[in-house]
Amino acid sequence: MKPSRAVTVLVVLAGVAGALAAARPASSPQTRKLKVHISVDMEGVAGTVTADQLGPTGFEYGRFREFMTREALAAVDAARAGGATEILVADAHGNGENLLVEQFPPDVRIIRSWPRKLGMVAGIDQDVDAAIFIGYHAGTNNPTGVRAHTFSSATLARVAINGVSVTEGSWNAAIAGQFNVPVIMMSGDDAAIAEVRKAIGNIEAAETKRTLGFHSANTLTPQASYTAIGQHVAAAFKRIGDFKPYKIPGPLTVEVTFKNYLPAEVLAYLPMFERADSHSIRFRAKDMAEASAIMNFIGEYRPDLTP
Ligand SMILES: [Zn+2]
Image (cartoon, rainbow, N blue to C red):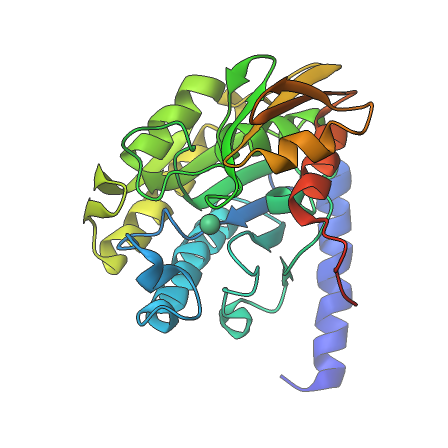
C-alpha cells in the first residue's frame, strides 16, 4: 500500500472506529484499554536449578537468558491475544539486564536494572489493569523451593508483614494491590505457586517444574513451558473478572531477619527501626509503596555507592 492511500484508509478507518466507539457502551472489549504489567524473574524459569543458569558467570546463563526471554514473550503474546492493549515488562532478576530486549515487539516497553522504586514490580501504578509474574520462585522460609529466597539469598533469612512471612510473589502482589491491580497469573515451580496461591487466592498458574530440592528439579522443557505459560495467560484473560487486588491495608509492620548480626545492630541506630532480635529489625510503613522504598534502601545502600 502506498503512503498516501494508507493515510486515506487510516482516516476512514479512524472515522468508522470513532462511530463504532460512540455506538458501543464504554465497557465493550473492543474499546476498553487493558494495560498489563509482566514482572519476570529467572529462578522459576523451566530448567533453572543452580547459579550455572542464573548469572553472567554461569556456563549456561546465555542460553537461559534466551529461555527466560521466550517465557516472557509467551506471556506477552497470550496477553495481547487476550485483549491487552499496552504491555510493560520488568526485568526483575539479578542485574536486571537479563531479558534480550531486541526480541520483544516494538510496542512493548521494558524496565531494566536497579535500583528503582517498587523493585521487581517497578512501573505498577493505577493505570495498570492486570499483573503477571513469570519465572517466580518460593520464599526464603520454604523448605522445598528451588533457589528459595526472599529478595536476597545472600543477606536475608526472613521478611514478614504483620507477623506473616512473605515471598517475593505475595510482597509484589501486595504492592500491585495498593494500586488496585490484581495478579492474574504466575509461572514458577510448584512450591512458589502453592505459596502465592495460599496468600492471594487461586490465580492462574503455569508450573514450569517440580522441586526436588534447593538445587534440583524435575522440569518441563523450555518449549513445553512456553506452551503452558501461553495457555494459562489465555485462561486468566478469559476469567479476568475473577481476580481481586490483594490488599494489605496500612499502616503495616515489616520484620526483616538478616543472616548476620551487624545489619540489624547498625540499622537499629535509627529510631525508625526497632531491634526485634539478634538478627532482626522491625519497622512501620504507611503502605506497601513506603515499605518497598524502605526495603529498597536496606538492600541497596552502601556508603561506597558510586557514581
Ligand atoms: Zn531472581
